[in-house]
Length: 563
Image 1 (cartoon, rainbow, N blue to C red):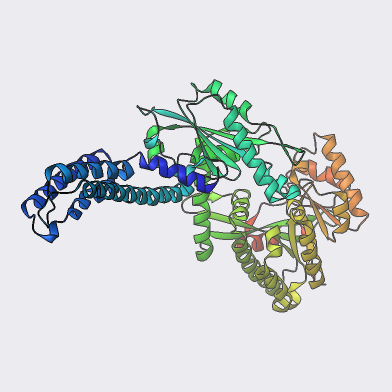
Image 2: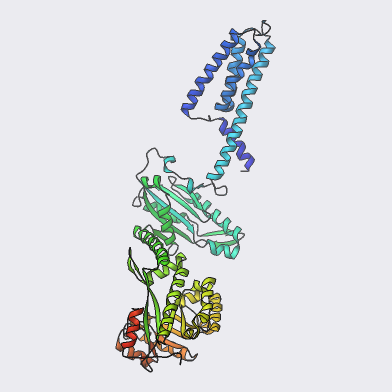
């Protein structure tokens, strides 16, 4: 419906409804009746006073128009006309009888005033409601915004104890937008939600707009009671929509949660269902129910990252450990990997494979890397001062390579370290390598020109292609411990290790096996041609002081990279 027609219709509807509640209507009616009586009495008593001209009757008419719109203004105008003609029989100024024409003129004037006042108020009220409606209702879909939802305003005479809350999201919306454009994707969402409302058989539900790609569905009753409803709801979602003669597929994600009525009055009603919908987007069938344990885990992660941020500033709870790397050809310790450790007063010892991925997602990895670089560079300087000439490797995240602050730190290291810079290696996971291959490759090429050695960590787990592997210029490939842990039992793992060794040897790349924990695995790796190892079989990661002491007393030879 065009905006002008909508506003006209709303004006008509507003005219039929008072602008106040029942108490206000009762009070206004009492005031209007009193005003009519007072006006009539004043006009009768003070006949010769110009002030009490029949215009005084306009006051209750105006009040009626303001409160009851056109019907009230017209009705009180007619009453005032009767009072003017029947109760006040004479002209109050000239003290002679009213002519019938004067009486009808004043009657028409009263009705006209009531109509104009009522119409003006109705128009202004309708316009205000139209503006408020734009804030509460999505114009394209006709759905109320979820942020405006309240079960206290629901049509139920008695509020149910439990509600089934669903969130339906179009999970391939971004793909459609990328291929066909924003307008096509937007039109698709509108048609999907409109089609869904038409097909939904259960009329007890409330459908609300959450975003351009998601809607919320609220139904009274528990999940156990709503099994059939959930099935019908899923069937009501169209699987294809035709736009511009193109049949586009719809891949919905449905998050389902159960909520108490008290929950819906105290907090955002769709929080749990939105959380479940996020999980559903990653599921094969696109459906997931709310899991409180997962939510608690997310909240725990939030607390964890908050504490990590604080500890990065203080640095007291963080430390660096060093794990040696062994060359099997000459039985020599030739390098060590720097590994961060976090002993949180609140969370205890937090494993790096837990907090590092969270730090990457939370945007804190840059701060972690800066702290690690600062500590390891100091330790490397101390090694060289004490005559320890082995290499040191430091882990980087993919985001570090596009962080200009970190890149500037790395660019400045050769000048800061001087001759001690020789033997500093940067490790990047294979997963990080393929995250943004072009940008990562460009950054690695610059670091190679500066003089850093480059290693790919966790090789075999990041889904990089042979084409990508061919393009990168690295010094070391570290075979992930997943393939090493079952090396004695799995012929497939042995074949993968053997193939990796052959491939890397053809490019003069050093092969290192991670997670070596027994002499038997060590011997097998030697047979397969892997001559560099790292793991508990050699030594566990150690604090800096302990590592330096271990180097001075262990059974292996120690390399001199500066020679």
